[in-house]
Length: 511
Image (tube, rainbow, N blue to C red; front, side, top):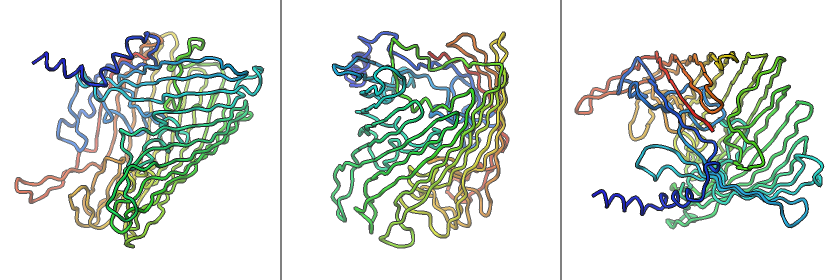
């Protein structure tokens, strides 16, 4: 039996890819590595099966249920993952003056377990780049760059903060994840700003006009943007337009779906950069450049600060819910404000975000997929604000902190709603947490404000290893479960305890 299992595993093409890549790779070819050991309990007040969000109990490991709404604002990760990136990078001068060529094969490895290799390998922005130096070698950041993404252009996104960014691979709602979404980007860089043009393509299985015939059809995205940063003042604008396949529904079958919009960012900074998410950056493994993905925080004696504001307006083509055979453009919008200040060893930060329900569900798309909100529905946007403070003790390499925030979740209210295949009669409000998670409140009940705070302490043992302890509390009176008897009758409403108290103890090596 073991011999059969060994043969089956060696026949897996992904495993062969790991073996082939690992053979010539050196330890230095792996970068942005995170090895996390977590002891956690998402809610001391609820055991397994006692809440809408299940808490398996205290143990080793953690997930999204161990985070709060203001955590990880500028990244796709929870912070508890164990993963690494294999980056095979090469950079060489061209045969032509002032031209440099570089390329990187960038692969992400998620560590889920000790047996399943089918979920562990992803392209994370492999690219080919040509850079033409416009200064003749006399100045930095004065060039014209052509970047080609042969597999995935998901890192080439629009917007600025990761939480409300858009234009990634998910912008194509019917695309097959097994099909690539390659991209190309042409960017002009100057010491005072930049401008870019780009495009993406993917293949979607579409209905051809008003027929039952489906074929794979190429869909496109066009992206553009520019920005300036002069004397600490930053102003940026970008936008895009995407074809998103065709509708499969009767009455509009074969009609095209479109989406697009524009984003802007305004900011001011002094002594502190207005950075971008690491999930937008391209990986380089250049031996001539000392790159540290997880740089220790630098503290100074003076005051430094940064403040920025971002806004996005989107549209998408959806089916009109009341007019059979017609479509309508649904509008979505999002805004945020981010600020940070550093004075000596003291740090303060503020994050505030506003998203319309249509923005939260933009990639689904909409509440009922592919349909606009009906006239009888009332929607409310998501809003949250959080402020945090921490202080660094350099002799102890210890940084304790505190964060407090409030969230008003996005909601959808209508008479007689259907979630999945379950009907809920009466006037119902549905709390929409994200594209996949919803809570249906009892008849005539509205959503309540959510309060959260977190106490945390980070102890840096070395430049690569840190231990983080977190205790968090949330008051959330929006979690409801519905239970029925054995025959499916006599449904009862059960409110979860609104008090949630949890903890995380994390040892994480990052290198």
